[in-house]
View 1 (tube, rainbow over the protein chains, first blue to last red):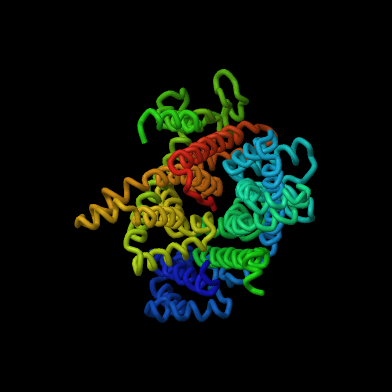
View 2: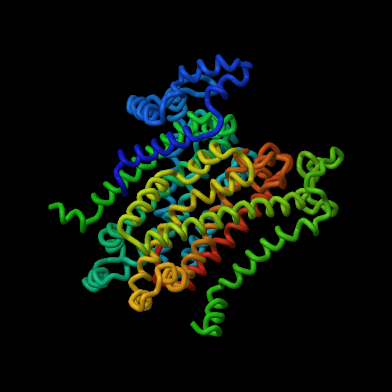
Length: 301
Length: 280
């Protein structure tokens, strides 16, 4: 895991390069609809600072980025930061709700499968995980809308508002990552349960429940924590699709709309925000790992 | 490994079963276009949204187009994009991973730094960003999906190459004065083929998912061109009246990805039981 700041800096530089090297130039795109003259385009270019050399533009880009300025939308002319800030809460809510579903169902299924290893439950969990991993969210989302909104009429199909609008998208998004988490959790539990110290605990007459909760889970959940952090990247991508399926506002809809319009500053800004969120979550899971691991903890003492 | 023993294990691990399913899906998409009765693009205002029946086995879509024909043609395009993407991933990943794993030191450091930065992007967001830069269409999509797969793949090749590098036969080859190119291509490469094939298979499933997601979002070919993702998107508006419009491509995606993933899992176990990895 490389540090947060270098990661963001490297990604920002990469996006800058991509924006800089792209054929069509923003000033032209901006004015193409208004039949601007060559002089007007040149003026706008100077205004945007596009005539400066690469290092100058790069320096300015980084300086503005430090101040939270991601440029302006080519399409609406509004600051990218403001546009993103507007859409961010909706996506954050969806991502957190999805993450909760992932953690609860992923860990739950994984633990159940490991404890009942070899039973029909274990087989069912691994079957469900395999199908879940192979089903894209836009397909499971449509199935969920069909069943729970159209046939059973339990939840609204699309849109946003109260909690009832969040249930289906969060469940669909969460389940999409749960399969991977369940697999790792199960594998890790099975491995730890075969360790000598568990045998010792059993021979001392400690009950199975107590062994599971006091000895196995503490260590076995560590790989799951790492995978949950990595799955967050997958979840962010899934959120983009989920928002489209359920016609919800958010960063996902914004980025798709902007890719279609070739509104590159908005695309770059949104992707950068996604990278920062992903890096933050991985930093958090890293810290959590350290806090949970008894081996690392004992070193700190 | 002796051939009969290998075949026996192939059979026992069900790799053959999933492999046949994958082959069947690939064959259907490849040859299907010559078999299906209807033109996938032909619109017919008299046969809109027909349920599955004798004339149209899987029904018709809102434009009166035959869904089975579109499914088969769409499979050709979606699987084709995913296949091209995997070729890009494998090619670039092998090159970077082998260089990194064989040379180590500064080369390794430089390549792995780039890989780390690329891994900092959530997968689909990187694909969308690349599509924004490269433009829409199948070719751009294949390149975007292919590039996005490179970092994870080169990491895998690197670790496989690093452990193979320490093997006696590689050291022996170096000791008798083999050229570096020969050591890499004749000694390192053949010994990491197993994990590479297994991972490429899993990568293919991942590529199908992401290529169809991007197409679902409207960033693939124009909607008239059949693709599994965009077919599902079309069915979105007719869930109540005509669920078969989205059911057909949806089931096709799940079946294709599931069989590819299961094949990948089995291959992984078959080639190297000791090799551990985590799919992220």
